[in-house]
Image (spheres, one colour):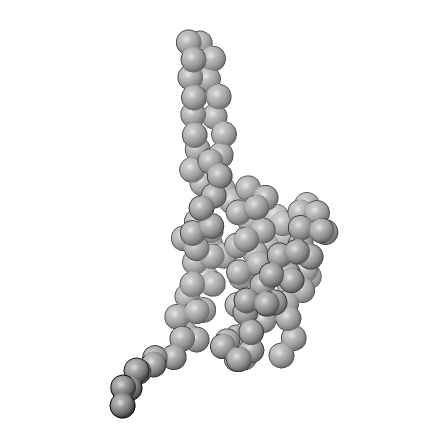
Length: 113
């Protein structure tokens, strides 16, 4: 099974087209190590795609509706996005990755002699 690609990620997350190639390459390498065919089987590429889109969205801050932090001193106020926690619920891509994972996890049993 082949690893995902930048083109596949951009097909589901066009807003990530401005992420630098170096960042894309690093995230792609990370997810290729973490999402293997041995665990995910035929869902390997799609799991990699959604996990990479999630991570790139968190890194780039492109997710709309995230946490906002506001500070006020007298008449001066500043608002900015809070750093992400990389919780899968933080992005739509992370939620989809978590859903894919649920379909790939096999139960196990511990037997003691």
